[in-house]
Length: 124
Image (cartoon, rainbow, N blue to C red; front, side, top):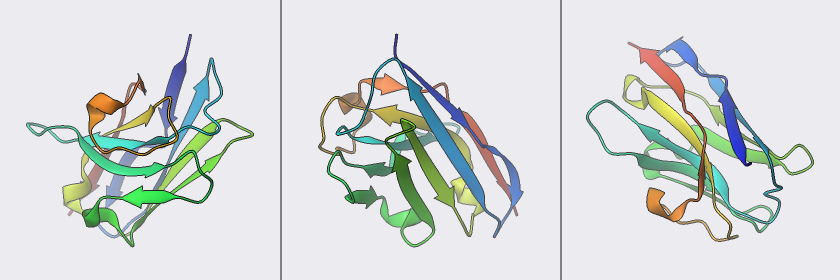
């Protein structure tokens, strides 16, 4: 049984930082794409960042470029999202996700596995 378990969410003031972690179990995702989506109240789930199965290839939505950094530790089957210079508009539930392909895609329907989500709230 595959599980993705997120941690690291919380409440932070604008300009602050948080680091999200996502530990996968049940199968290895080395060589497969892993990433993060987020969903704010009343909005659709949107792509945030992902790491392809090819080492070193990362992708970001425009609104987080230069502020967020995705990284992964394949030995620990874990992916991270370092979020700096947080803004109130970053407030959302953040979901870890993975797909059984090395290729990063940005629509949530392309992903096979999902975590339960972790709340990130940025106060102004």
